[in-house]
Each structure stands twice: as C-alpha cells, then as structure tokens.
Image (tube, rainbow, N blue to C red; front, side):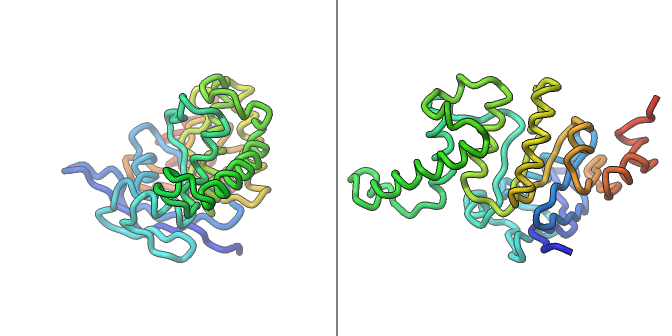
Length: 255
C-alpha cells in the first residue's frame, strides 16, 4: 500500500455545547483522491478548518507526512505541505492572474520585507524565479495565455481553476478542495472532474469536500461520510452508494 500522507486520529471539535466534529479519523495515501461527503451541517468544513490550523481540535491529532501538526498555525501548515481552497472564491481581484499565482509561491521564498523595500539582489532574483514558476502553474491550469488579465475577468469556472492553481503554487504534499464545483454548470463540473483526476495523475494527493455526487463518485478513490459531525461510513464509491446508513442519511433511494 502507498505511503500515508495525511492521517487524523479521533478529531473532535466543540463550540460551546455543540459538537461540530466527533471522533473523526481518516487517512489519505500518496497519489489518492479521498472524498468527504455529508449533509449540510455535517461538520465537513469545520473538519477542514481543523486540518489547516484555523481551529485547534479539542481532542485528537492531525499528522502530515508523519509529523504531528496539531495546533500549528495555518501558515506553518502551508509551509509543511498542506494547502486548500475555500467554498467562496477568494482571489485578489485587483491583481493579475499571474500575480495571484505568485502569492501562492511567496510562502516558500526567503527574501524579507526589507529586501523588497530596498530592492536587493536577492529580492530581484526571487521575483524572476517566482514569475517563471508561476507560469508553470498557469500552464497546469490552462491559463498561461491570460496571465496579464485581471483575475476577475475570468469566467466563474476558470476563477475556480485559478484558485486551485494558487494552492498548487505552494507546492503541497496534500491539496484540500472545499466545494470546488460550487456554482458550476454541468460542463464546468465535468471539466473540473477531469482536471482533478489529471492532478492525481501528476502526483498530487487530494482531499475533496463536495455536494455534487456525480463528481465525487467519478473522481474519488475512497470516501468518508459525516453526519451530525460523526463519521458514519467509509469505503469505495461503490460501497458508499450501497451503504444503507449513507442512503438514509444523505444519498436517498434511487427511483
């Protein structure tokens, strides 16, 4: 079996008297796409927020490539190799497409704010390297020809791809995608599904939250199901589709 890149052990997150996530344990292997599904309010995004350091869990541990990252800050986790997108598009609208990608690379660079202010040789060299690297990621997401356009000039589906490209630019071991198909039409969703599988084939390991079951069943190798914050099932797409508890809680019966 391939290497485990991400593992959680009994993650629990409470807000006052509400338990948003309860005893959730998952594994993501190298070059794998894992889905996390469940009804609205099941705790999926809260779980992502724990993984990325926005919340520190009340109980449990998060391990990234064998290292305990529980309680680390989001920027520290990004440097260690796990990045994400968000449900709502959060591009820098006053920047070009190229500049948006470059922001994802800066977390790995060594030049300081003083280098930037003084325009030192190190800063100039890193800016050149960063632009060249950003073009590489724009090629991956198919937006290199539009590099100097403003980010907000892109159609909605391509803005989603740009967000994923910015996350890839930090060179992650693990990529977290939170509702990447939200607001997309059928063709955009199909294109996104093919793109996500291409990322896996390129060597990326992905955890995906998504409500579009066609996309989930099409791209995921394994799926975890949450309901009211608790993990109620895990398995392959075929196993999940046939699971009576999942059908009752979320998928519903087929006509």
